[in-house]
Length: 402
Image (cartoon, helix red, strand yellow):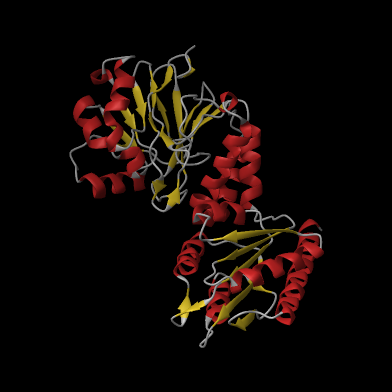
């Protein structure tokens, strides 16, 4: 069996994007893959397409196996353009008998491509479709992470074609989880979850419960990005279960930006105070850390401590941008505090507190702000704030475990 064959007659025919470095604001330094799958049966079926720029790559993969014009069915699990961008070109090249999608998928395809003449067949949760020796079971996964999203489960093979769930932005010529170091796969899976699925935690929990209730015999999970899980299925499902519960470690993140190093001095002092309470503290300077990498660390942090100087009665732009990005991902079950330096107006702490309260995070302190350069006494106050934060993290951690 080749590296591109999931099971007899089931082939990976996707594309590898080695060069992509930004995915609508998410840093993809490891590139990505756009996974599509070809099933050879009485009705030859293609599951998902690829980004339009990679249409020729996918067609080359298909032509190595069959004539594309012999494809009978096309299943679209997700209409976002990294998976359905090449749909119009595929429809023209293949002319399938059926274009199979969810009810919201049909709506999204029409709104993207404006082709009501295409041969839609709409499927809902619980519907089944035979393609010969194989039967598909469909499960809608609305808002994971678009309204149209769904899973397609190949019942006889035990393969779950999982759309954007369980994915990783990871470019690799290896197709399976046991061909790449597990730490690499799980790190990229965590980053993917933190930046794409984090805000849908309640829906993830419902989906995991539904799949467990259905008692599917899942032998393989094939997401639309990254490697396919065949060995570490339990590990990725367990990780999703943990990430979606909002549980956290004894860890505090001090996320800051600084102008003339005064805010940085405060950050270091707060870090010392947190460490004195035997809580791990990590300083994150937004000047050198990308927001999507910061959000990956937020996933299992117990406290978020934000710092910024005041600039023109507001925050430094990097902090303002990060707050907007984080607000959209809705981190929960964390304590928070703020700090900053200023020259004359000093709105930084007020603005940071407002943002943290708006995100429904628990403020453990009203925050600290100091004019120009903090004194030794000021830094002692920062250490004391750090200790209060460390104590609060440990208290919440004990409550979480009880």
